[in-house]
Each structure stands twice: as C-alpha cells, then as structure tokens.
Length: 132
Image (tube, rainbow, N blue to C red; front, side):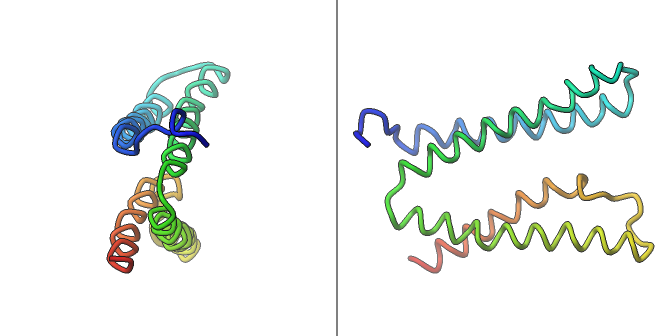
C-alpha cells in the first residue's frame, strides 16, 4: 500500500474517539427513546439500528487505523484485543448466570456492554507495558 492512501494514525485517532463517543451517546438516546416514546414498529427498528450503523463506522475506522501501524503496534493491539474480548465474554456470562441464580435481575447483557469496551483499555496498557 502506498503512503498516499495511508493516513497518519494521529489524524485518525481523534475521529475514532469522536465516533465512539457519538455511538455511546446514540445508545443512551436510543435506549431512552425506546423506553419512553410511543413509536410504530418500523420507527422503533429504524431507531434501534442507529447505534449499529455508527458502530460499524467505528469498526471500519479502527481497521483503517490498524493498517497504518507498524508491526509492533499491531502486535500490541492484537494482544490487547486477545485479552479484552474473552474478558468481555466472561463479564456477559457472569451477568447472565447471576440472573439465572436470582441476582441482578434488573441487569441485562445489553446494560453491561459499555463496560465490555472499557476492558480494552487496561488490556492495552498491559500490552504496552509488556513490549516496552
């Protein structure tokens, strides 16, 4: 890939952060709207797809950003994801089984998914520390 099509990571990172923040705000807004507004089924479905569309844009931007990194930085990102993804699955499974045991009945996996994303941050710090 030539350098003309490879934007600098420092130019993409703020856009990724902005898109992630917009996605989180959209999730909160859509959740509130679905709980409090009387909408027809088609309107509810369209509203529910807004965060999905935003998150697909964030994934695309994240992949584009990864392709601009050198081999060591890619390895660090991969290791952080290899830690965070199973940890997120464990968190979701913990909530589900706590519900089956009669606890945390007011929580759902959908309520804890923002925390799943936050698991990536300590995993990234660990991976950076390991390769320093």
